[in-house]
Amino acid sequence: MNNAKPLLNLLPYQRRWLDDDARFKIGMFARQTGKTFMNCAEILKDCIQAEQNKTKTRWIILSRGERQAQEVMTEHLIPLAKAFEELYRGATHGNPFPRVQKSQNAMVFPSGSKVSVLPANPDTARGFSANLFLDEFAFHNDSNAIWRALFPVVSKNGLKLRIVSTPNGSDNMFFRLMQDAAEGWSKHRIDIFQAVNQGLPRDIETLRKNTLDESLWKQEFELDWQDGSARWLTRDLIASAQNDKAGRPDLFQGGPAFLGNDIARRNDYWVAVAIEKYDGKYWLREIQAHKAISFKEQDLRLDRMVQRYRAQRIAMDATGIGEKPVEDAAQRYGKSKTIAVNFTAARKLDLATRLKRCLQEETLLIPPCPILFDDLHAVRAQHKNNTTHLKAESSQHNADRFWAIALALLAAQREIPFARVRSVRSDARHHPFL
Image 1 (tube, rainbow, N blue to C red):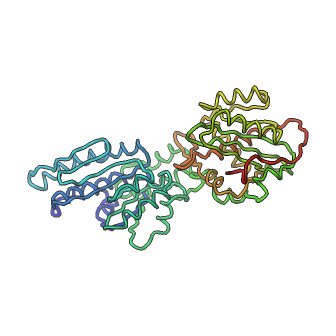
Image 2: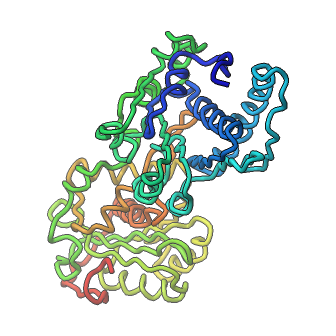
Image 3: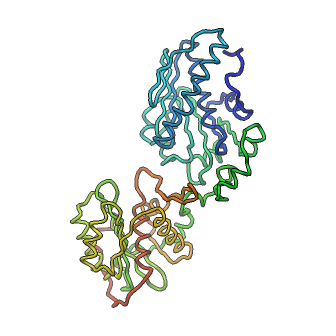
């Protein structure tokens, strides 16, 4: 095979990647430049060479999700295997191509070489000892946790690591590796202009016009790190709102109070938030977060908070299972004081925008709590079909505190006359976040 014609008609930057035998290799490539294709080509080439040498190799491909993992198999590995089969016969004067067994998520060669394609998560990364290809790593949920799980695996026994992605803000492990990884790493970088200059058939002007979002274009095609288009709230913005006097129910001043309630029953956290308007700012006074508590217990805890702060209004998540608790709350507190919120993409964007604006205007004060910080920082903005979608990219939580605070701020939009009340004590034992 070493003296045969090139296996595939690769572009110069793809050929450089394929010919680069570095053990640790990372590349930042623009969208639509064939980065997954060229990595699959390298992996199949490695499997065929192992087959010829009567040895075996093992590769794991981790994609950002189930759908993307299936696409790697159907759109890249299977078509490439067919192309390799024809090239193999031509290069070996008609010798049969190694018989490959294919399934939905794996390819197995006769001598035992295997390629598995799986959706990425920390447990998957920890569970295998194999060469690894991380596809679109900047978009993996919990990329930091995946990195902590996998690097001890590939750092032993000479295993190879291949990482490619387009940028996705600066708060992920892909960014850190591209910026800081040095000794032993080979780095590649190709933006859309370089790719087209090297023969990629793309109309740059048409692509740019149809992107409809300048920050998206700069990040995914010009490879300019755009932190604002990834994390909805930056670390600095969250940190600037922290105040030691926030998060303390005993410091409630008797001002107008508003509640937000993100409803969950089993998998996520049921979260209720109380904020007080005092001295021109919204003070987060208390958060109650509980997992797998009954609807009866949820109602009791919410009733106590409404009474404790004499809440003027409460905004509640009415999506799915939330419909019944919201109806019950409206009967207990009155329809004028209860806001039912269905979490559509547009409504979530409205809620998140209000929350961000309060932080930017320094009118929201929060306690310095790591759990709360993580929830606020977990939400990402994804641009698709000219629409912004917000989602939490973490396997450990669903940013429930983020949405409860956003709901409380919605409830605070309109105030009604109130009677000032005295300071209160929380029923939380030690800290309102426990």
